[in-house]
Image 1 (cartoon, helix red, strand yellow):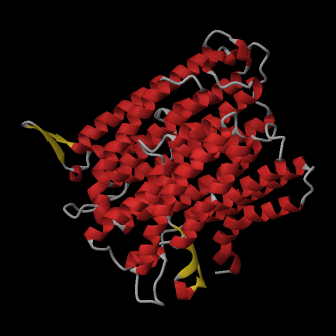
Image 2 (cartoon, rainbow, N blue to C red):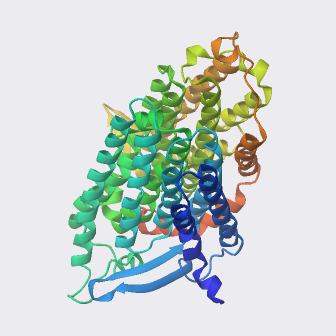
Image 3 (cartoon, rainbow, N blue to C red):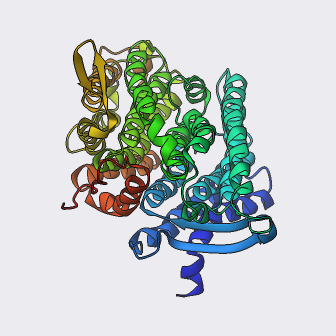
Amino acid sequence: MSWLEAHLLTLVIFLPSAGAVLVALLPRSEGGQHKGVAFIFSLATFLASIPLWTSFHSGPARFSFEQKSEWAPSLGFSYHVGLDGVALLLFMLTALLGPIVVLSSWGYIRSRVKEYALALLLLETAMLGTFAALDLVLFYVFWEAMLIPMYLLIGVWGSERRIYAAVKFFLFTFIGSVLMLLAIFWLWSNSGAPGHRTFDYVALLEQGALPAERQKWLFLAFALAFAIKVPMWPLHTWLPDAHTEAPASGSIILAGVLLKMGTFGFIRYAMPLFPSAANQWAPAIAVLGVIGIIYGSLMCMAQTDLKRLIAYSSVAHLGFVMLGLSALTAEAVSGAVLQMVNHGISTGALFLMVGILYERTHTRELAAYGGVARVAPAMAAAFVVITLSSIGLPGTNGFVGEFLILLGTFTAKGMGSWTIGTAEFSKGITLAVLAASGVILGAVYMLWVVQRVFFGPERKAASHGMADLNLREWFTVAPLLLAIVWIGLAPQPLLDAMRRPVDEFIERVGRPQRAPPTAPGNKE
């Protein structure tokens, strides 16, 4: 293995930071250069990440592209990174969205451009590092590093109530993170004798599960931090404000990547490290997921602001992900992982389109729109395709993930049952049926948006000859449209990549009274 191959993952992680250094050296007045450097380095990061996908294989090692260097060995710190199939998919999603985010704000951001480019590039490194980290302290450093640039994106370049939204986002995330840090310290202090303690995730897994009575509070500390980030109902209240006030690029990052940090945290850390507690709390998490699906969908129907409506749709879509993870069947967990990617693509694309509309009309109010398809047919066509993906139409990426989640939940015999009087109801079947109502509600509110904005009578926002998509905007929209169709028609490469980590997740966390099922496509 060459030096480049051995260090490729680290190079990709820190390539955006190298761009940030270059931006910092440029004169403040050169806004175009700042944007250009940010785009070049974010595009280079995506291109450099492609070999991670093409060279990825499930070998004897649990993680590919693994690199470990001692940081402070006497304290158990190490720089340890690597990717399994789940992390790889989210890593690639982050790299794909990087250049799209820069292009999406090219014409909108005109003040403090240097600081804006710095925030985007440093945020990308923090997000990539979070998915790749295999040391708990390193993970926590990257996790917290995301807060500052995202806080600035909302608080400096956001809308009227940006300071309120930024502070609320920071406080919610930081409070949950402090409890997780305390749990990380406890794991370290109980990982071995003094001088041999470790924060290494792989080493902690190999030590075996802790006694069940000790897992409960540790799991809750991790789970609270991740549930806030998802966000799960009722910890979701920061999200609509953050999305509404953030610039379009901030909303794309929030929906596309940052929310996945929460769901990724459950499948990577909270549930594998504390499997007994995860089993105990899985039914409650599933119920909260279903409540989020229905609540988020109903709240969408009451919104008059386009961005706020899509923000609540994220609560509903990520409720499906949490339902799939807590069902603990191969189909449901595979669908949950796939839906993390799908949501990043589809909802990120929706926020991109709303940003394009806002640049032209300077309003997000639904009442101001109507008849846009008459003056911008290409924009309308792109929005319709993205909408069909969001509601899970067969042939689009959204269908595959939701179908697997509902199928896996429906067949989750290990979830137990509820007894009401003399009647007994399977929890899996009941939750799957209730969650399926969210698919119907999603179609209702999203198709209503399409009809109201693009195909209703012409209103003020479309009455001044609104321009259709230009070349730069096509470069941002087209990759996401291609991803929607590609994953919808050929999801198997993604399912193959996640198969091994999904099987290992179920084997470790799954209930002992039933054999671990295989991932979709595996034969019994």
